[in-house]
Each structure stands twice: as structure tokens, then as C-alpha cells.
Image 1: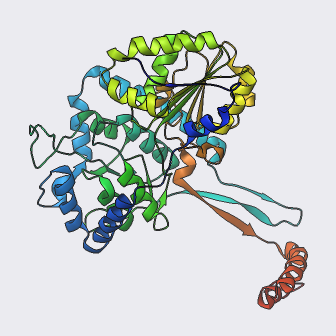
Image 2: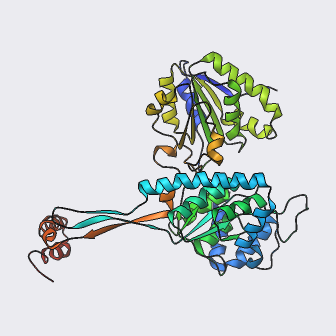
Length: 449
């Protein structure tokens, strides 16, 4: 069966309308989900552990007598680390090393306090401090995501956060083979927690886990910020608790845009499109290319390779529902369209990617050159894989060390500086009708304490 993926050309009449249909995705959560999440959060806020246990039993099938039986410790993580294969241990260590190295450089670049003294001797600057406690959500319903754990926990640790609390759902398998009190605890995820230095975790998920982290319960400590991806219930819950705690972002379905000049093997590009399509039926995979013949070769590769993919049904639904192969007039025009899309992942699949990179302003992450597959960024390249989606790369950034820090302004005005600044401040304060502000500044003119 052929794949009914859209094929568009910028030179065709009506392209703009078709292009807008490709981009359209409503981030609005279904009203039923919104109402359900609000009810769950209200219950968790009011009844704490009891509500979390009830929802964990209802949604994950785990009948736990207490939250203590759902808690994981450093000993559990260390045991899982010993349980996995040497190859898996090595892969986790190497990925964590690269992720840590990147974020340590990020810390040096933009995560340090700074100050200076002006001509009057006043001290001005910024104090950067880590958050006290953060919660990281690691998805665990349909699949296991040790990579997401590393991408959230490692930068938090590099930032200096002293306490990281992880939540990860461990639902009972539908075939009934799991222990009803434990659920399916993935050893690779637990081993990743060991590698990342997570000390405390709970096997809870969904909106109830977000509520427990945001409000705190008798067992789950209240955190300052929650990061990490999740399903529609998790995204909705994060939106509801924002303000009580900080959040990283409300992410939509995953996206990849491949900007190709026709020099990369078509099979490589087809598989890169699959790499995001296999996440979710709502994920989006788009190819922009000025070579019509190359687009056809990629389409043929899609047809040939798809039947061999274990998640072929999901990939097909994603490509047919939201995917597109777009023929552009030039690479320059392809770059313009890319900026309008502002994709989560942007592959510049070209012999000369640095020629086009300066034209690309909006993307969560750029992957330059034919050998830079998006999947390398997902796991081990080093930069964070938690990225803005749904066009929000126009104004937001990847998860980073800066998300686990806060900044305070530092001001120490000298006696000399008060003489200059006091006059300016008083003039503006009187103009705003705030006399106390003005008088507070004027009292320091030629005065000593």
C-alpha cells in the first residue's frame, strides 16, 4: 500500500493555503482532558498521598498500600545499573559524559554571576543561583526513556541543584505478567538515574504526579520547578500548576524538518523522517528540497523502507496526517519556509551546510551535514533534546542549565552614585506621582546615614 504523504510545490497556485494546512495543529487540549486534570489536581492538593495512591491504582493498575512502596532510592538505581548489560552501561556513561560536557560549557558561558563598578563606584551585577529542588517527569507509559532522564537530570546537576526528585509511571503490563504491586520498572531508566545522580524517585505518573510535585504531599516533596515531557494529561497539568511552580515548556508532538540539496542518500533522509514519525501519529516530518527528482527518490525510499519498520502503522499515520514533501524553487526559498515553520529538529542535509546555516533563524536544534542524524542528538551528541515545538522555537530555547537557575539583580550604590542617581530617580518618580519614591531618593542627596 502506497504512503499518501502530501507533495507540494511552492510554484503551484494554492500552495500557501495547502502549506498552512500542513502547519496547522491545535495545541488546545480537549475540554474533557482539561476538566479531568483540574479535578485530579484539586484532589491531590486536598488529599495528598491518598489521592495519588487512588489515581495510581486507577490509571496504572498498581494497588499500593502506601507511597513508601512506590518510592525508589539510590540503592534501587545502583542495583539496576548492575543488572543491565555492559554495553548498555557503557552507552549510558558515554551519553551522560557528553551531555555533561556540553552543559558544563553552557554553565561557563551563561550561568555564572557577574558584576562591575561604574564611574561612581556603585556595584551593579547579577547573582546566579541554582533552584533548591526540581522535579523531573520521565515518561513510562508506552515506552521507556532513559535518554529523557539524562537530558533533564544532568543539566540540573551541572547547574548545582541540590535535590532532584524524579517521577516515572510504571503501569502494570496488560498481559498481567507484572507484579501488581510493582508495575513495570524499566532497569535501563533506573540505571540512567544512577548515572545521572538522581537520589530519590517515585513510580507515579500522569496529572497526579505533576500535582504531587507542585503542591507537595506527606511523602512527595514540593519542588520549585517541573521539567520533562509527557502525554496530554501531563502537558495540561503542567499548564495548570504553572505559577505555583515553574515549568520548562508545554510541548506538542515531535517534529523534524529536513532541508536537503539532493546530495544525501535518499534512504538516509527517509529514515530520518521516520525517526520522528514513529513517536506519535501527530508527529510531523517535512522535507524541503529544490530538486524534484530527489524528492521522488526519497518518496520511493519511504515506500520501500516502511514495511520493515516495527512501528510502521504509527509512521504511516504520521506521514499521511501531518507529513509533507515540498518542492521549492531554491535552497534560499527552502530556508525562508523553514524559518516560518520554526521546527523542533532541523536537519541541513547538504554538502555545504554552513552556506545555509546563517539563513536559518528559528529552530530548536540544527543538525548540520549528512552525517548528523537527528537521532544522535536525541541520545548522545551532547546538546539537550528537550526542545520547543509547534513553532515556539521563534521565541524559546532548548532545555539547559539556565532552566535550573534563577537570577537576582545586585545593586550597591555608593554615596557618590546616590547623588547622581537620586536626582534622576526623583524626577521620574515625581512624574509618576509617587512622592515617597522621590523623597526616599532625595533623602540620600548629600546626606550620611
